[in-house]
Image (cartoon, helix red, strand yellow):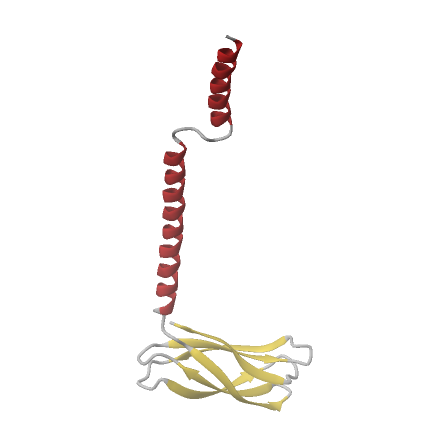
Length: 143
C-alpha cells in the first residue's frame, strides 16, 4: 500500500513540476504565438525602413563645390562656386565670408533661377564687417 501512495504522489508532483517549470500543455501554442508576434514586429520595422529609405532616395540631388575665393580688400570677398541643381528647379544658396577665427563676417543669400543645365558656375561678391580670410558656399536648398 505504501508503494501505491508513492506512485500517486509521484504523479501529482510531476504534474505540479511540469506546470511550475513551463512544461504546460499549452506551451507550444504560447511559443507559436510569441514567434508570430516577433515576426510581425520585425516585418513592420523592415517595411518602415524600406519606405523611409525609398522616400529619401526620391528627393532630387543638389550638390555644391567651392571653386575659388578672392579677398578683394578689407571689406569685400568674391566667392566662385559650382552648383549642380536638378534641371528646371529654382534654388537658393547662402554664401559666407570668415575671418581668422572662423567667425562669420559676411553673409549673403542668393536666388538661383531655374535652368536647363544641371551644373552652373556662379560668382558672388560679399561685403564684410571686418577683414576676411576666406569665402565659401555655406549651403544650398531647393526653393
